[in-house]
Length: 241
Ligand code: GLP
Image (cartoon, rainbow, N blue to C red; front, top):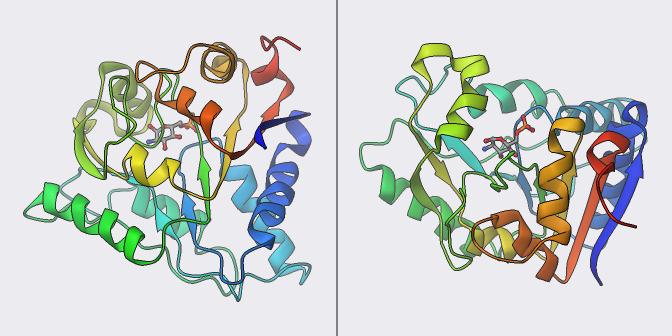
């Protein structure tokens, strides 16, 4: 099956992504999702919340999902940390199980990462992982240079990732992240990659039509057997037909 790309208008991005997620999850009895944060998936979570609220869909059969990454912050409830994101965007969906998350305040962070990775594997692996993409091609916090066999880990954020994060964190931008590895992410049975806005146009081409390699972790998705990509027109603008 490989990579399928759907291009939609910015106005319909959230609904299209939501529709695709439900399609991808539809074939599983008790879907286990991996959830991305960031600006990109917000319209998806909002559309999903709305559809559940209207009674059009139910997530009752879904397992408690896993957050795919977290910033290392001393206050787990920091408003810019992913925990706060899920408290807002995931918990707003009626009758959903709370997301299972990394504890950024754990004393032993590498072990915390390993434990979450093991929990994903013990649960049978992710059925569907929702991904955004960093401007440098990262997936979750798998920065350029990460090998495809990398398991969940404590990682050092690149200057580019920190620059993006500083929009929220300001001077106190974290230097490290906890993340599922490319191993757990690429092992997901189905992938939903989302990107919107002109700022992602270049990396979308690099990831989907450039050479596959660890200098652009998202390029490994080209080899995934079942990867669906939803883009808005601006993010898709530089793709070759
Ligand atoms: C962060 C997250 C990623 C996310 C990416 C893109 O670094 N760790 O999981 O996909 O940034 O974020 P945005 O959607 O805000 O562009």
